[in-house]
Length: 428
Ligand SMILES: *Cc1c(COP(=O)(O)O)cnc(C)c1O
Image 1 (cartoon, rainbow, N blue to C red):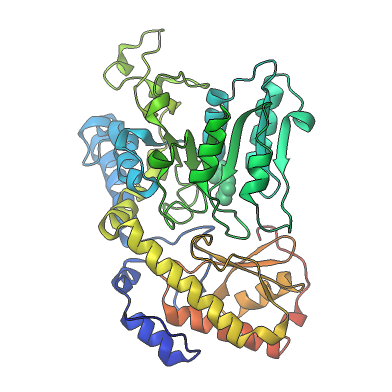
Image 2: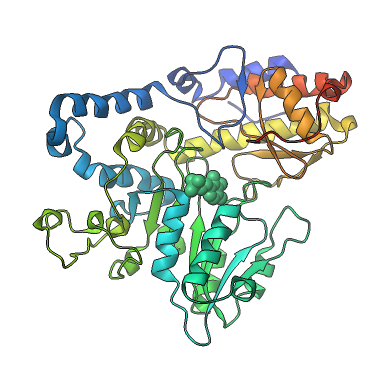
């Protein structure tokens, strides 16, 4: 496609689709006819390749039983490492710095148990007040395990506007008492990208360890964890990586920390050739693999083989390029079509600051989301007043973005949301 000159017409959406280098990937996914899926940042859709790789592991189980660990078409014993290697380009890491294991929250527990080493004067953790609740619960409980009071030892940087964080404010909070920093790469509501390179540099200048939660960026935004010298990171694979509900998560440890013993140790953290020696002394793997605990959840990991293969083919830079244009186009349409209906755009407009989704704020958001679903568009709602919309590079078309905005316009014009209560469902 040539340069982008926005027009609000359906023809322009079609032109964008015609110029889309990733358009063919749409056919790789199971899309629900008549529905427009804008929730790929909560649960990515199933691809045919992910389905196929899951079936391979089922078939291996059927055919080989226990021998599947080493003899199957996809030997399970090396699966977490192999998928870690396939994930490494998504986060800018070397192959042995990434492992797939556990869940986002259990990986944060593992990493905090490993990297939070409080001393007399340096015994606080720095996070932020906008982050995902599970991360805060994990950090609070890690402090409690050290006999420290989360009320005083968990410092949460404040947001000035309830949506964004300022790096200056985060840096100002890096006091001598801070031992560990855990922050999101991309905020789950506003979609703001934090300047990770700058934050890592400032943390290290003060002798503080820093790690990132990549749930809302991995698979949508490129990272350079090695170059930025991030200490560790963790993320889920069921959002932008399309690994399926409860998919096994990712974990990155910078190689400068390979000598560190995991805070939570288990036999799958052993050197692969020593694991079955069955000794009571632990031979730690010299890789991110050391941070695994028990037997990997093979069937929750297998879809990732097919999904990550697609990312390897396309490359994360291409994914990002389309994702940025999708969200830019979305915002331009919102400006041109929805200005009169009281929406505020809650996500950053600057490409360097914007993740893979956009946020619309409106006082009637909860019921506008219900009306959207009734009209065939799947968004998600986030408290207190946000409609979150994620067009996904591998399977969303520009025409679907156009149609979503038309549906929103119809809902607002006809006040269709008034037939619903303005409260969220159990899963918003
Ligand atoms: C989705 C998400 C989680 C979820 O954690 P799980 O352990 O996978 O349930 C955690 N943190 C962030 C920032 C998320 O977006």
